[in-house]
Length: 153
Image (cartoon, helix red, strand yellow):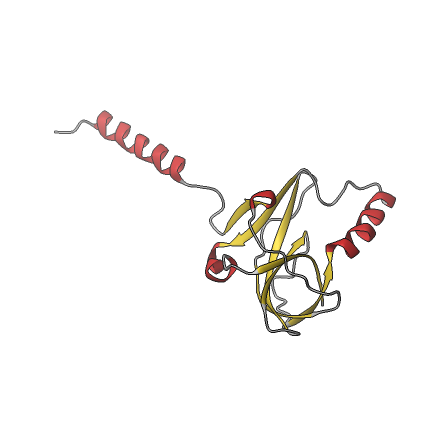
Protein backbone atom coordinates (compact mmCIF):
# COMPACT_ATOMS: atom_id res chain seq x y z
CA UNK A 1 0.00 0.00 0.00
CA UNK A 2 1.23 3.52 -0.86
CA UNK A 3 1.68 5.90 2.06
CA UNK A 4 0.26 9.40 2.07
CA UNK A 5 3.77 10.84 2.29
CA UNK A 6 4.93 8.81 -0.72
CA UNK A 7 1.91 9.89 -2.72
CA UNK A 8 2.52 13.59 -1.90
CA UNK A 9 6.19 13.24 -2.87
CA UNK A 10 5.23 11.61 -6.17
CA UNK A 11 2.71 14.37 -6.98
CA UNK A 12 5.23 17.07 -6.06
CA UNK A 13 7.85 15.46 -8.29
CA UNK A 14 5.37 15.19 -11.21
CA UNK A 15 4.34 18.84 -10.79
CA UNK A 16 7.98 19.99 -10.86
CA UNK A 17 8.67 17.77 -13.89
CA UNK A 18 5.64 19.17 -15.71
CA UNK A 19 6.63 22.78 -15.03
CA UNK A 20 10.24 22.14 -16.00
CA UNK A 21 9.17 20.61 -19.33
CA UNK A 22 6.93 23.54 -20.22
CA UNK A 23 8.87 25.63 -22.74
CA UNK A 24 8.49 29.33 -23.36
CA UNK A 25 5.52 31.09 -24.85
CA UNK A 26 2.62 28.82 -25.80
CA UNK A 27 1.60 31.05 -28.75
CA UNK A 28 4.89 32.21 -30.25
CA UNK A 29 8.33 30.92 -31.13
CA UNK A 30 11.26 33.36 -31.13
CA UNK A 31 14.34 32.84 -33.30
CA UNK A 32 17.42 35.11 -33.11
CA UNK A 33 17.57 37.24 -36.27
CA UNK A 34 21.24 36.35 -36.81
CA UNK A 35 20.29 32.63 -36.89
CA UNK A 36 17.52 33.15 -39.43
CA UNK A 37 18.51 31.61 -42.75
CA UNK A 38 16.85 33.21 -45.76
CA UNK A 39 17.40 34.37 -49.31
CA UNK A 40 17.08 38.14 -49.61
CA UNK A 41 14.14 39.48 -51.62
CA UNK A 42 14.74 42.51 -53.80
CA UNK A 43 11.45 44.36 -53.38
CA UNK A 44 11.33 47.92 -54.71
CA UNK A 45 9.99 50.69 -52.48
CA UNK A 46 6.25 51.19 -52.97
CA UNK A 47 5.56 47.61 -54.05
CA UNK A 48 2.08 46.52 -53.05
CA UNK A 49 1.97 43.39 -50.87
CA UNK A 50 -1.24 41.37 -50.46
CA UNK A 51 -1.15 40.29 -46.80
CA UNK A 52 -1.71 36.60 -46.05
CA UNK A 53 -0.43 36.42 -42.48
CA UNK A 54 0.90 38.54 -39.62
CA UNK A 55 2.81 36.88 -36.77
CA UNK A 56 2.02 39.22 -33.89
CA UNK A 57 4.00 38.64 -30.69
CA UNK A 58 5.37 40.44 -27.67
CA UNK A 59 5.92 44.20 -27.71
CA UNK A 60 9.46 45.49 -28.29
CA UNK A 61 11.45 46.64 -25.28
CA UNK A 62 14.68 48.60 -24.90
CA UNK A 63 16.47 45.24 -24.52
CA UNK A 64 14.72 43.16 -27.21
CA UNK A 65 13.71 44.10 -30.74
CA UNK A 66 11.03 41.80 -32.16
CA UNK A 67 10.91 41.38 -35.91
CA UNK A 68 7.31 40.53 -36.77
CA UNK A 69 6.51 38.62 -39.94
CA UNK A 70 4.16 39.64 -42.70
CA UNK A 71 3.75 36.86 -45.24
CA UNK A 72 2.25 38.13 -48.46
CA UNK A 73 2.08 38.12 -52.22
CA UNK A 74 4.17 40.63 -54.16
CA UNK A 75 1.44 41.95 -56.51
CA UNK A 76 4.03 42.93 -59.15
CA UNK A 77 5.43 39.44 -59.78
CA UNK A 78 3.17 37.06 -57.79
CA UNK A 79 5.97 35.84 -55.49
CA UNK A 80 5.14 34.88 -51.91
CA UNK A 81 7.46 36.90 -49.68
CA UNK A 82 8.30 37.37 -46.02
CA UNK A 83 8.62 40.93 -44.74
CA UNK A 84 10.37 41.25 -41.36
CA UNK A 85 9.32 44.48 -39.66
CA UNK A 86 11.13 45.66 -36.53
CA UNK A 87 8.53 46.59 -33.89
CA UNK A 88 5.72 47.23 -36.39
CA UNK A 89 2.58 45.72 -34.88
CA UNK A 90 -0.96 45.58 -36.15
CA UNK A 91 -4.07 46.19 -34.12
CA UNK A 92 -5.52 42.75 -33.25
CA UNK A 93 -8.85 43.71 -34.85
CA UNK A 94 -7.31 45.15 -38.02
CA UNK A 95 -6.76 42.84 -40.92
CA UNK A 96 -5.67 44.96 -43.87
CA UNK A 97 -5.74 43.15 -47.19
CA UNK A 98 -2.86 45.06 -48.77
CA UNK A 99 0.05 47.26 -47.79
CA UNK A 100 2.97 49.07 -49.38
CA UNK A 101 6.55 47.95 -48.75
CA UNK A 102 9.36 50.33 -47.77
CA UNK A 103 12.90 48.91 -47.32
CA UNK A 104 14.40 49.29 -43.83
CA UNK A 105 17.34 51.18 -45.37
CA UNK A 106 14.87 53.99 -46.21
CA UNK A 107 12.87 53.86 -42.96
CA UNK A 108 15.68 53.32 -40.44
CA UNK A 109 17.36 56.77 -40.71
CA UNK A 110 14.02 58.52 -40.14
CA UNK A 111 13.10 56.34 -37.15
CA UNK A 112 16.55 56.67 -35.58
CA UNK A 113 16.51 60.49 -36.01
CA UNK A 114 13.10 60.81 -34.32
CA UNK A 115 14.20 58.53 -31.46
CA UNK A 116 17.40 60.56 -31.01
CA UNK A 117 15.47 63.84 -30.98
CA UNK A 118 13.08 62.54 -28.32
CA UNK A 119 15.85 61.07 -26.16
CA UNK A 120 14.83 57.48 -26.78
CA UNK A 121 17.18 54.55 -27.33
CA UNK A 122 17.83 52.95 -30.71
CA UNK A 123 14.98 50.85 -32.07
CA UNK A 124 17.09 47.86 -33.07
CA UNK A 125 19.04 46.82 -30.00
CA UNK A 126 21.50 44.11 -29.07
CA UNK A 127 18.95 41.29 -29.01
CA UNK A 128 16.84 40.88 -32.15
CA UNK A 129 14.29 38.06 -32.40
CA UNK A 130 12.05 36.96 -35.28
CA UNK A 131 8.52 36.08 -34.16
CA UNK A 132 6.76 32.95 -35.42
CA UNK A 133 3.09 32.50 -34.54
CA UNK A 134 2.72 28.83 -33.52
CA UNK A 135 -0.87 28.81 -34.85
CA UNK A 136 0.43 29.79 -38.30
CA UNK A 137 3.69 27.82 -38.50
CA UNK A 138 2.64 26.11 -41.72
CA UNK A 139 2.77 29.42 -43.57
CA UNK A 140 5.32 31.29 -41.43
CA UNK A 141 8.01 28.61 -41.63
CA UNK A 142 7.79 28.50 -45.43
CA UNK A 143 10.91 29.04 -47.51
CA UNK A 144 10.25 32.53 -48.89
CA UNK A 145 12.52 35.26 -50.10
CA UNK A 146 12.74 37.76 -47.26
CA UNK A 147 13.09 41.52 -46.95
CA UNK A 148 13.45 43.71 -43.89
CA UNK A 149 11.36 46.86 -43.94
CA UNK A 150 7.96 48.26 -43.11
CA UNK A 151 4.48 47.89 -44.52
CA UNK A 152 2.36 51.01 -44.93
CA UNK A 153 -1.42 50.75 -44.67
